[in-house]
Structures are given as structure tokens and as C-alpha cells.
Amino acid sequence: MRSEREMYQLILGYAQQDPRVRGVILNGSRANPTAKLDQFRDYDIVYLVTDVAPFKEGDISPRLWGGAGDAAHR
Image 1: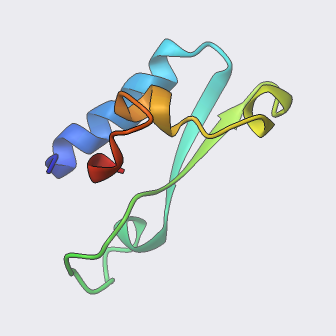
Image 2: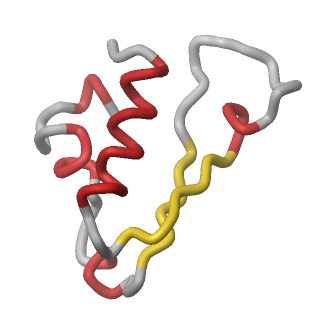
């Protein structure tokens, strides 16, 4: 399992590598300093992009996490 720091590096690294990404927003419990900490917290990420159309065709997860079969790290 990846650490929180590694996850943020992946999320921001993807944004820095793709010129279509103009910003990144963290939502949900990880953005709320008063939220209860538990093992089920996920990463609710919004990428602000120049054009949504290319992203409607599929999930960016395989490109972000390193492969379509890498479900353990999503």
C-alpha cells in the first residue's frame, strides 16, 4: 500500500506531466481537518482540465496508477 505522501506525489505528478491539466482539487475527508481518520479514507480528486472531451472516453486511473490491472493501489 502506498503512503499518503506517495499518493500525493502520484496525483500531483500526473497533473504536472499532462499539459491539459490546469489544476488539482482535493475534496472529501482528506480535505477536512476535522474528519474522522479511519482506514477507509479515499482520495477524492478533481482535475481541472482544458478540455473534458478526451477524458470522457475512459478512466485516467490506468495511466495514473501504472496499469489497468493494478486495482490494489486504486
